[in-house]
Length: 116
Image: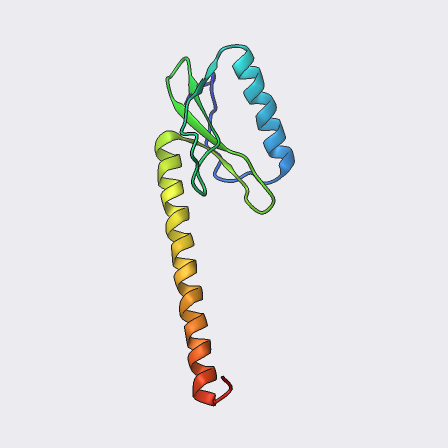
């Protein structure tokens, strides 16, 4: 991280306005050639970034996921983005398993009560 790229990581944008301000900064840095577009996979999975950038000064790679409705997005360095995506996927898997267990408990209770 340096003054030519970004000075801190953003794990979630607080508002659309915050994202718009960052997008303006990003466009300025691209126009001044402080950042270059870093290629990422065209096939995206949930929680993965849409675009990548590399700082010309410090060579740090940054990944951006844009906010969309309830999804707040992020701007993180490569290692932080990888860890964050892994954490989000683990949390999502945990929620799905919990929902399935609750559903099976409800069906079991209904069968036991004779409602089904």
